[in-house]
Length: 305
Length: 311
Image (cartoon, rainbow over the protein chains, first blue to last red):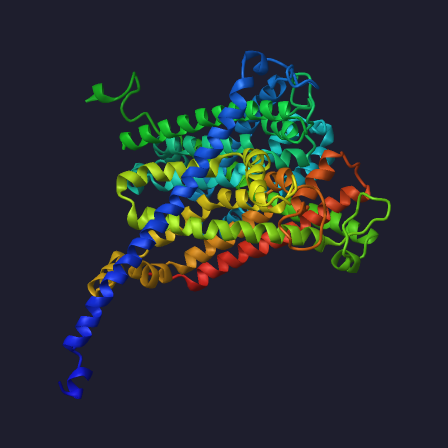
């Protein structure tokens, strides 16, 4: 075999041999890589199963009707989550009532009305930035703005202050979801409406929104389910941890499920840890219910198109 | 053909009320525009609040003290305000959690986009979404009452509160975020690039490591930075599992106090307006805000600067 031949572009037989010899090790490395990819996914799933099982095992023993209909107590066997459940319900209704019009309105404005000006782009960058601000910072804003500055309106550390703080927290999520739902509506519908002499708003209200509505609703429900699980911003605005009564109005002091759970986890006695797990089961059941609703709406939406 | 016209309106007598339509349009535009401006107001509110209270704080405590003190004891009689005590805890926890989340999330993303069949993918993606949707207080329970006792069997000197358990659980919490964002970046790599690598005789992992990942690098780095930013701002896991003991240093086996945990500690104690404690949580919040804003801005810049565009 000539030296010149081995330098040519065509591989010499010896090189081909070496290439072949290499193949088994390359394939085995391939298998190791594939296995580690599956392992990583498996670990994530296993931790999820571990977490859910732990909480079920810890909490199911103390989960009963008395637990759901009792007020918090110093004695773990008498403590319940009624006040927290009612507080969560109150806060969620207010959050939904404020977030829905404001978030959807802002989404409609940005997607349908706004021209491509520097102001629009500023708002867009700003919204993506807000989505990255830690939730506890929103709590500090709520503390300064709603609890202190607007105390005559909100009544201090009240349902209204908590709800407004959570509204600001989830607004970016709702706006982005609204815009995506609107963008999915075919442009020909808008053009047809405009060609018939309708104003932009008439087109949006009568034609675009009905089609986009299930998508928007899904986004809003998912955002609300995020708000339900939030603890830190409400602790920062000073939602109380011990509330042995139901909220009576928007200006009433309140507590919510995650804060009640946090309070129980933080105590040293094991009995309180068990009822914390029971509280978590209730919280997760509420979340599961909302997510199922969102998935149901999304599937119906996908079928109708 | 009058029969086709609605009701008893005579043909030609109906005109759309264009003036009213236009007025409604303007009104709706103004209202929706105001709603969109709420987001700007939120940002201004956050910045104004933090700056205002931080300036008040800096009148009582000098910036030099804030940056160089080696102890954090604002609630004691002899007050010291070394923010780096809290920052060191936050950094320790974030680094460990990202060391967990990066390999797990990236490999999970590769698994979902390259190895899983569409059917398995349809099951796995919602499972990861559940992991991402679990409230943080639940992770806190898991870290404090389940993971810490398990870790204690391996490391007996581990305290009831420690940074390690909080970081590991926090890492699991941000894994779905890394996985989902990295998967988006990996899916955006065009098929032709992969086919080219296969045509040259690469095996699957060679294609992934030397073609797919470099092409998706900007998205992966962005997901990593966002994960760090998320870890820095996370509150409930670290408050519950890492303790409330301000310690300067990077030892994950001892109880520490992060910036977020301090804010929670003071908030639970009901600090009155105008007191130094009240101002301190805003100064700490300012530090936290600057750190996450810098990271988010960097990630934004990185994607704009290094994104590979494929037609």
